Structure formats: C-alpha cells, structure tokens
Length: 456
Picture (cartoon, rainbow, N blue to C red):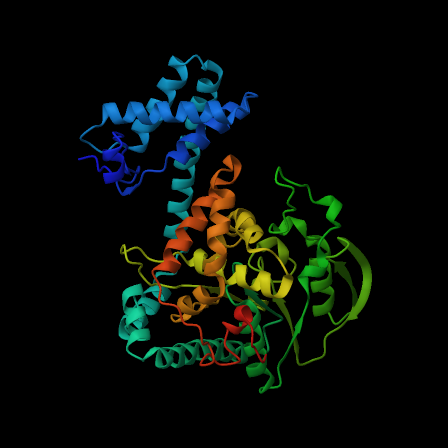
C-alpha cells in the first residue's frame, strides 16, 4: 500500500513518501530527484527554466498520485511517467534527451555492475574481512547499536585499548615479514585509498624496522607531478590529481632503477602553491642498510614500479575494513569512513572546506576503482586501517558540517552524487552516540592523523 503523510492527507495531496529501488529495497520518495532529472535533460538541449521544470515535476507527482493510490511505485514507474508527461506537455526535445540519458545510465549500470562483480570476486580479501568481523563480534562492536551500548555502559575506553593493540600487532607482523626477507627486498610499497591511514602505518613500521637496523628511505612520489597546466580541468573547475597518469612515471622508474644500482639521483620538487615542478632539485642515494619506501595512493599500480623485479618489492595494502552494521542491517561503507577522516583532515591541516572535500570525492572513488582495487590480490600483506571505535569520535568533529553541505548540493543537478553521499553519511552519523572527549585515544593512534593531537 502507498504510504501517505498525515499532513499531506489533510491538505488533499496523496503524495507517496516511499518508492521501490531497482534492488527491491524501499526508500523515501524525494521529488527533488525528479526535478533534477528533468532540469538536466532540459539543460542538455538549451533549456534553463527552473520554474517550468518545477511545474513539470509537480505534474509527474500528480500523475503518480492518481496511478498509484494504493500501491508503492518503482523507480522505473516514475521514469516512465516522466517521459509521458514531457511528451504530452510538448517538450519533445527534453523527452528525447531524458530517454537517451536513461538508456545511457542503464548501460553504465549494467557495465559497472559487471565490473564491480568481477572486482569483488577477484579482489575482495574475504579472509581479512572474516577476521575483522569476528573480532568485532567478540568485542561487541559489530553494529552501531552495540557500539552505542559500549559508550553507555562505560566500556568504550576498553574498546579503544583493544583496537589499538590489534592494529599495532598487525604492523608488527608486517615488520617481521620484511625483516625475514631483508636481503632480497629493495622497495617497500605502502598503498591504499585516500585516508586509510598510510602515514601513521608508515611511521610505525619505520620505528619497528629501525630497531633491526633497517632504514626505510622515502622517495616522495608527490614531487613527481607534472606541471599543473598539463592537468585538464573538468566542468567543475577541479584538477584531477587522483590518477597515476598525473605523475611522471618514466622518471620515477628511472630513479628507482638508478638508486637500486647504487647511483645518486636528483629528484624533482613539486610546489603545490604554484603548481610547478622543478627538476633535479634534491640529491638522493642509498646506504647498504637502506630500503626505498614508496608511500602513495597508487603504489600498487604496475607502471609506477615496473623497472623493479616483483620479487624485490614488498607490497602492503591498507584499507578501512570497518565491518560494522548500521541500524538497517547494512555494513557501513569503508569509503564513508575514509570520507569522514579526509573531511576532518582537509579542514584541520589544509584549510580545505569540507564542502569541497565531499564535492571532490567522485574523483577519489573513480581513481580507487581503476588504479587501486584491481591490484589488491597482488599484495604481500593486507592491513586493516579501520578502528572499531572511531565513528563516535569522528561524529563530534564533523557532523555539524553536513546540513549546509546537503543544502548546497541538494538543488544542483550536476552534483547529485555529492548530495546523495552527504545525506547517507549524515544519517549514519546521527545514529551514532557522540564522544566529545577523545583524551583516551593514544597520542600515537592512527586516528590522531586525522583528528589531531598526534605525537608521531
């Protein structure tokens, strides 16, 4: 049965408040999605009349009320009605654009579904996920409800301690693997998606290896960016720094090969303020006890280190394998955890508006799916960078930013991805009890990399 709001019933408006998605799940009806779709179709053929767009959207809703008085419509039902209204009201060009867009989106969904299915089957580290899930179950934090209960019953600090111990043990295991093969390994690669915790993990791994007289020497990949004028802007005015092709891969490989051969190289230096790369700025060479460290988003990308034999590289992959279910029974998205971390870090350390971080996230995710996820299965070790206790603390630092972000992107037809993402993460944060005092989080915790107060 179609669910009607009491206020709408009193006003004589039989507006549905739920619809069926393509996967069969029920979601809240949002007329702004219809309005946005019509506006985008109209804009593609030169129409920018927002008032007329709203009128057409209202007619679609009116048609829905009449056609589905006692049942819940599907997304496909609504799209069929949009086409019908556009044609009947004389907007043939807009209708054609909408139909073509709908067809294109269907093709993209089918292609992405097949790609994602293949990526999941080949690259998801099920063994690691199972270990993390079991740990969460054993520590009563595998759901938001249980996490909130640990805050309420005073055992939250114990959860922090246990989570930190497990993370440090994981790093110790990585160090042991490198130490065992120190005579063969020439390059250590620490890779993973944005805000997975690479910086803290790298620093802690360095500390462990230093005790065994092994020194990791960083080759700063960020200095190998091409000049900014070689990076095209998109329609939003953003530069895409998230792709490995933004780096001088040939020069990286040339320097790696030379360093391993015992030669000295002159590395470039990239200035993020001017967007210019200065060539041959800093001398770099290796001592007998030193191993090259590559700490970068795209370290697993084959072309970045193709000059080095595979058996001379140790590849560590880090990801936020959260494995906590929300109040609807769905696992919290790993990428949403990382988005929250990056929003906080960007604002705290880079004076970068959280609004822009959310708006830029489509670049991050696209690059991850293309240049990181496909290579997970080729790593030597997979490390969990998620901390089971972090959501209540992340909430305190960033939840206040979401209402304005949602409002900003709500009516922007070109940024619906940002709007949907912000709404989803905001709903997640609202379900979590807030922890304002994070003094119980160790100063050397991975979480400090984002919320501040670190000692590393």
